[in-house]
Image (tube, rainbow over all chains, first blue to last red; front, side, top):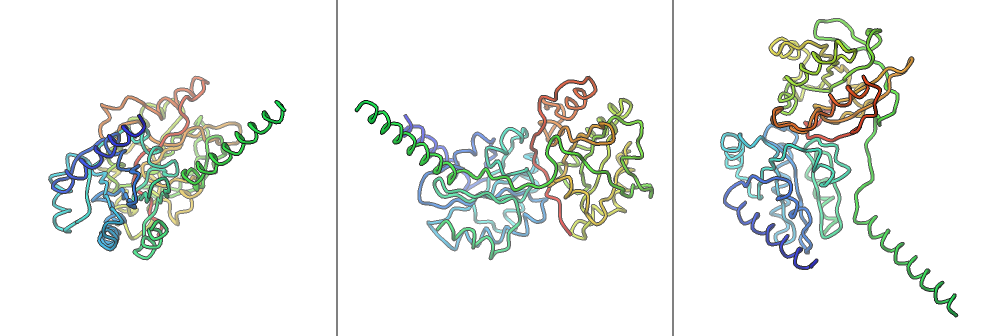
Length: 158
Length: 213
């Protein structure tokens, strides 16, 4: 049973990432959750951000860089907390203009108290925030990164 | 013989649970690093400049039974979505002894929208009915442990003390007040007013991180 549900979780996650190649899927927390617990050799870097959040936008290039620096080993997923009605007007143009290569999802789940602790009990709810994990090894960061800091934290997982 | 088997089994179970606990520790990231108030702590008063130029302290409200202290900003879309609800809270609870005190913690050139000057503009536009204070020097928000806007603290007077009774979100739907089903701050203040236990004392919400200058 455990295996089956793991496989299903993986399939859902893969389908979501497949969609994210061409568009920005709008997901609720339940749909996002499988991407936060993939059990394989990839190190996942999940960054919570929004187009209006200055410190988030400032550090996005670093996430883009680490995404391309360790091909096959690191997967960067950018989870936007922009309002869903701003997807067409703001998020998509931003992603195009900045030529964002990482997968982008938009998390639309206004009952944040219901899911923040599921991402990490260390998260008070402010963005930018980042989860880095590989298998069961995971660390949560409620902070902004410099490229050096981000790369240092990431290499602990590689 | 039986006893030694039992002992052996107990030891094995013990080892397994210790290993399991250790594994849990590695896998979890539960260590809280927050500083600031927890529910039950005593809150300290402050003296901050209001948008009308006056200095405001909680001690200026001898009649109040407590306060709804909300850290909020002009620039943050989440805070903006809550502005009308903050005004409604003040209208509902000021007359019952729990006025809203709003504090803008972003004393930083990084957010020109959150300047003292722009606070006055925004308060006028929205018709704020409560003090909107500027945390000049950013000494108050770290004391409270606010990390983002909006971030709410319900305080209750007990003798000379101000006790923290609720920390967190205003309700459970930042997008749309009409879709909210849990009204955390309202429920907390109503419970205090009727001497009842607050069911939900702490919640979390997404917000804009407060920028340290």
